[in-house]
Length: 83
Image (tube, rainbow, N blue to C red; front, side, top):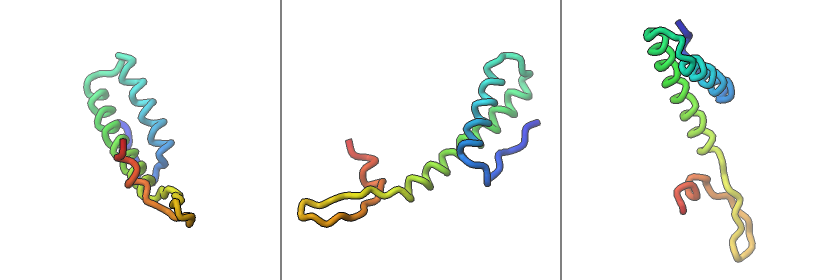
């Protein structure tokens, strides 16, 4: 059985592990029990990746310049929902 994802794993490591799990699941060679275990681990990895992306988004700031001249910083989230 696979180990649960580590909270200290980088997003790149988590994505690589997720890709490997999906590849194994798509092979069609795993018994149902292994498929379920891989699925559960995959869900945990997706959650970990989403948490890492959310944290990164909170840290990103956009440099803006007002028409009056001075440059300033604005939070990323204020631009993410605009269309």
